[in-house]
Image 1: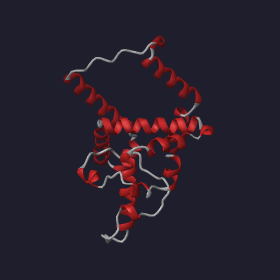
Image 2: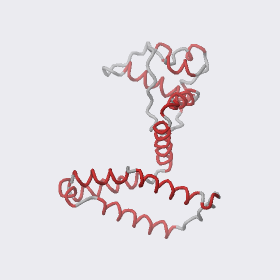
Image 3: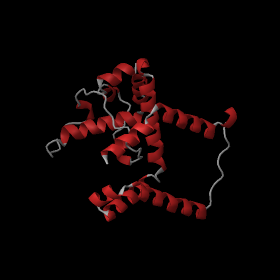
Image 4: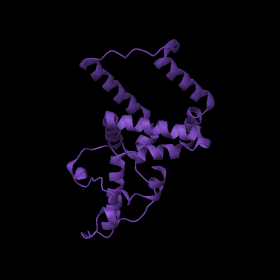
Length: 197
């Protein structure tokens, strides 16, 4: 089993395979150097058939050894949950962006692209508010006790760590704490304040 996994990973990460996939991607989206037309919209019956085929393909991926260890019913439920997860357009788009960003950082490592991405993220009010909210929760919910005397403005300086896989939500609770006052701008972490100048 381990040998099969190692062989699979080695095959898909080999230089010829990556080159072949890049060429196929280019030919699909830019045939003969021209941007391809948008694919026609599929009707409901075609979508249903495609979903059934994809579910069957997913169920066929798992080897008999792994299915025996995990259990057939657990494997089936897990793969169907994975299928439903892959139907979420917002998560798919976000996942593609993050993979593409990681690929760019890896390919152009000497150019310090991660600093450019951090600078881009630092301009977003949503990212700033999310960072403040997480620091607030870490500071005041660590022992399960909320200290009501503290507010976002009294946060300590922390390094720039954000979970970029979080999904954007437009809830009213986040907008209540948003403010353009200069006192809130001072509580940004040092890395954000440096690169946002």
